[in-house]
Image (cartoon, rainbow, N blue to C red):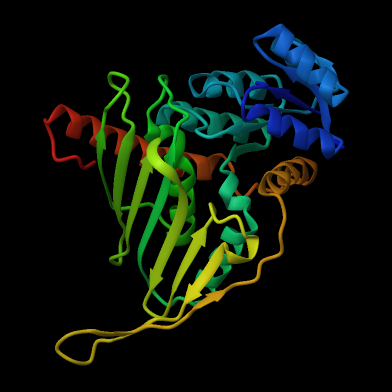
Length: 329
C-alpha cells in the first residue's frame, strides 16, 4: 500500500485523512497549526510531520492536499517536484496557467495528479452518467444544477469557486465537451468583493444548455442536478436523505407534431443504486491509480477543463458586477 501524507487537517481535510487511514494508507498528518496536526495524527494512529519533512521522506509516495485554495498550486508543485503523487482538493489552482503547469509537470515526471471532484465518484452520479451514455434520456437538451445552503460564508473565495467546481465537473462529464460560451451573474451582500450568490450559464455545440446556481445564503440546503433529454428526464437529489430516492427518472414525453408541443407526464421512477461512501471511493481510486499508473477519472486534465470554465465564469462575473460588460466570456 502506497504511503500517503495528508496536508491540511481542517473541516474537510480531516475526512480525507480519516478515509486514507481506514484504507490503511495514511502515514502522516500535516497542518500549519502544530497542535492540530498532533491531535489529528494521534486520533488516526500516525505521526505528525511538517510539509518539508514529508517531501524529503522517501517512504511517503503521495500527498493529499486540503489546504486553502490559494495554496493548492504551490503545494502541489512542490510535491510533484519532490517526486510525490498528488491528490489535490478542488480547485487544483486559482489560475489556468498554474493548472497547466501542474498538468505538464506531472506528465514530465510520470506522476499521478488527481483533483478532488468528489461527485464524479458518487454512485448515483455514476449511474446517471451511465444512463446518459446508454441513451436512456435521449439527446440532452438542458442541464441545471443547484448547490445552495445557509453558510458557511467565506471571505477568501466567492461562492463560485467554493461551490461550483462540483457542478461544472458533473455537467462537463455529461456533456462530454467544454462549453462554447459562459456567462455569469452574481450578488455581493456581506463581504466586499465576495459574491454570495452566483449563477452560471453555459451553451454547448449542438444546442445543449446548462445552468448552475450557487449560494451560501439560501434558507435551506439544496443539492439538485436535473438532466433533461428528448426521451426522458432525470433528477439527482443529493440533499435527499433517503438513498433510494436520490435518483429519479421521469419518462415524460413531448409530442411536437402539432402547432403547440404537448407534454405527457409520467410517474417518477426511483432508480436503484448500490450505496457506498463517495469519499471512500474517491480515495481508493487515487490509491489504485498510483499503484497501477492508470489515469484517474478526475486527473489534472479534467481539473484543467473545469478550471477553464471557472476562469471564464469569474471574468464574466467581474464584468457583470462592475457593470462594464455583458457578463459573458
